[in-house]
Length: 307
Image (spheres, rainbow, N blue to C red):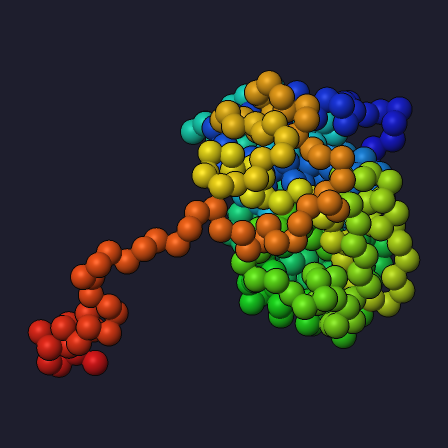
C-alpha cells in the first residue's frame, strides 16, 4: 500500500496513463471495468510496494482477468512498479508490456495471465502454500471477471476454499454482465453456498469498494462482487447495441474525445437483461435449405461406414 505522501501519481492521472497505450481496442471494456477496483486495491488495501516484491510477508495480487491489461499497467506505473515511459510501447514486439501480462517481464506482476479460469485456482494454491509455511500475515487477492465463473477450474477452487477455511484468500469479481449464463440468487450466492463471506457493491464507488475489501471475515475466504456497466455498452458499432453515453471507439479506450463521460453515475441502474440481449435477430434459414436431419442422412448415405 502506498501512502499519500509518496504516491507517484493520483487516480486523476489514470485516464492519461491509459491513453498512452494503443492497439487493443477489442479489450477496452475489460480494461476500464477493472480500473477502479485496481486503484482502490493498490492505493489503500494491498500491503505491497516496488521495494517489497521479494518480501515473503507481502500481499499477493493475481490478475486472472489478464486480457486487456491496460488498466493494470497504468496502475502499476502510477505506483512506481514500472516506468511510465514503457506505456507507449504497449503491445509492440520489443515491449515488456504485452497484451497479456508476463510475470517475467512486468515488474510487480505475480503471475502471467490471460487464459481465463486460472487466477483463482492459483490464488487458492498460494494461500495454501503460505499457510503451510506458517506465514499468517500475507493476504492473497485474485481479480476475476464474471464470465470466468463459467470455467470449471473456478468452480472447484470456490468449492475447495470455503471448507478449507482459507481466510487469507480474497477475490474480487468484476461483474460487467458479460457471462453467458445467469446464476440463481446472483454471483455472491454462489460463493456463499460454498462457505465464503460475500459482499456486492458498486464497482465505481471507491469508498464502497474499500469498505467491502476490508470487511472482517473470520475463518472464511472473502469475495467482493463489483458491479459495473455492462460490456454491451462498449460495442456501439454493433447494430442494436445500447449506448447511453459517449463511448471510446478508437484503438485506445481512453484516448478519444468524450472519454471523460465513459462511466455512468450508477451502474446499479443497468438492466440485468443486458446479459442475454441479442445484438441482432437470429439468422433466417433460406427456403429450400437442408435441415440438419436431412443433411446428416445425406452424409451417412455417402459414407456407409460413418457412425
